[in-house]
Amino acid sequence: MRIDRFTEIVNIDDRVFLFNIKTGAMDEVNTHIANELLKLQRKGSFTPLECNLKESLIEEMIDRGYITYYSDREETDERKWFLAKHKEKAKKEEKTASLLLDNVVGNNWCYTDSSIENLVIGKIKFVDLLKNIGNNDLTNKIDLWLLLQNRIDDWEWIDREVSINGLKINSLFTIVKNKTELEEIKNWIKITPSAPTVVHIKYEKEEFGYFTFTKVDNKIINKENNIIFLSKHPFFCPFIYKTFFVDGSGNISYCVKKLINKEQIGKIDSTTRKITFEHGWGEKLFTANCDKSDSCIYSIYCSNMCPYLNSIYKNGDECSLVQLFESLLVKKIKCMM
Image (cartoon, rainbow, N blue to C red):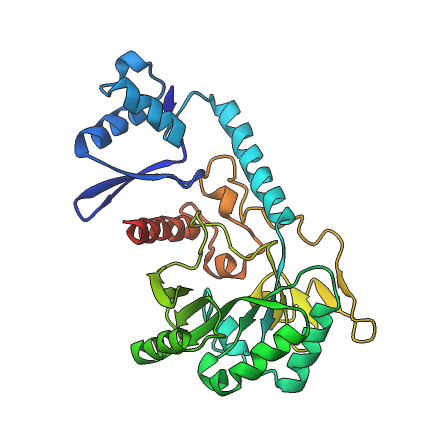
């Protein structure tokens, strides 16, 4: 046996946590367990008799992925299988069409590009987009990316037009400047029967500061995410394969940043209303930024087609993305504490 190479032992505010980067498992442990795991990690391979831990605890850690029986070769093969499984699962999931109505919202997600001009989709183009999406069998779910403060007065009309075209609003993405605007949106969700049940919010021009408001039985559950990634895994983009972003011209991309920069992978035909995607566009989505994928535990999340990661990546002996992933890991654990 040995400590799984994807197991991280993290100290936060005098508390110790185990996190498996591959499985997403997280547990708090005492200092005795942490020190014993660190000792075993330095040792390399070990037998159960060499562990100063209870047998039941060892079995639990094997189940959680912290300890493994795999050899280096088997672990590499298992990692490839894990990535392939995630990729195939994402491909098969029901797709959601994300309509980018206000560029400023998409531009503030992940990171902000000050050179991007804000474009706004008006009512005529919005209705045309709804007809295009509703005319296809690809999905009946849509996400709306819009500056909610500027469109609250039109919300009943927006909701009605969505329904007329046989679509359903899955969630809404927006940005705010301050806590006052955040509270205003929270109150609007609470008092508006037609408001989406899930609203994702980010502070404008801040690197982190993500919130999700979920409406349950007229109560608002507020969760501060603090990280870009809203999924179980802190490093998998929640949009790749699951979402296709559409702008007012019918251009389609897998990433909101790519869409804003006119890097499209598909198009809605304005005459036939048919949606088409470029063949093989997703083959490189899980290709790492460098050639150290066999030695770097973060390589399974390091897509060279992610603009956010590319904006940070600097090649060298000390990869700048490793520092990013480590900081995201700490933020993820704090969110789960």
